[in-house]
Length: 280
Image (cartoon, one colour):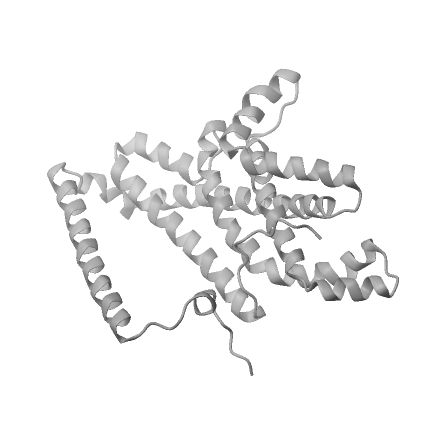
């Protein structure tokens, strides 16, 4: 049974006794500084009267959590839909980019770079302010979902391409020597292996999609942040509300990252994080 070698173990030697001692000391100092930082934040909360029960007591009501959970469900719907669209579009862009057709490859390359470069907020404003001027009306759900998925598709296209480039070239050459076409090689040999390699990375990229949904307030879509803003207005509890919402987002993104690590271990693959610049 072969052991899975981590990226750290592959790049660096195992630390010696002196290095381990330095790491231990550095960790202890970091923990002390972290504790001091937390104490400072709590002190500032106290000085500015942010620990007053009136800013926290409403979290003991079911109506507050029901409203937040409703917003969380809205966030999950947008993130899940945008993730599916981004994966499908990213896969198509990758297939176009590795196509032997130079025109198609160049077009997909340009589109990928555009989507990778444009911030999702700019795309949201485009769908919110520009598209309606041409008579195209759409629900707020799609005005946030489509821009987020377009922005993510450019990144996912490169993740897919990295997986394709991770497939041993010898397999492609052997298939070509047997007379297989480029399309059949891609469909039957390259893609199945590439998808297995990049699935953990695709899951981890959902963290970015979830974070991009936080700007849904621009189109007044009732997601977690929008509902939190409503509660802030009702209870005048900006710090406490944003603190709780931050904890919720941290929990969601941490769970997503841990799931991607779990998939990587289950499938015996490493999370793809560097993009090969040479397409198949």
